[in-house]
Image (tube, rainbow, N blue to C red; front, side):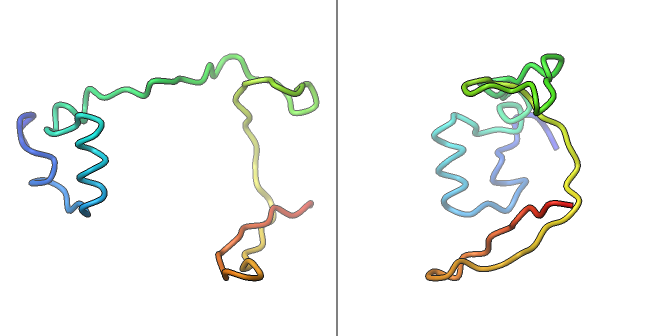
Length: 85
């Protein structure tokens, strides 16, 4: 795979994916490799959940111990519920 290879030649993409990548200006593999998110989270600036205040922007790390998959009442959309231990 060469850096100047078109993304759509290397990956199977849907039309909507091709359109989204085009809007972002990602045409070649090189474009994809050198695309960096516009926002970064400051990982060293982590806080414990009990220290958070309304409006804080921080990274939270944790472990999910119990989940339950269900469906929404009207549209039958899958929903994941996080259950207390």
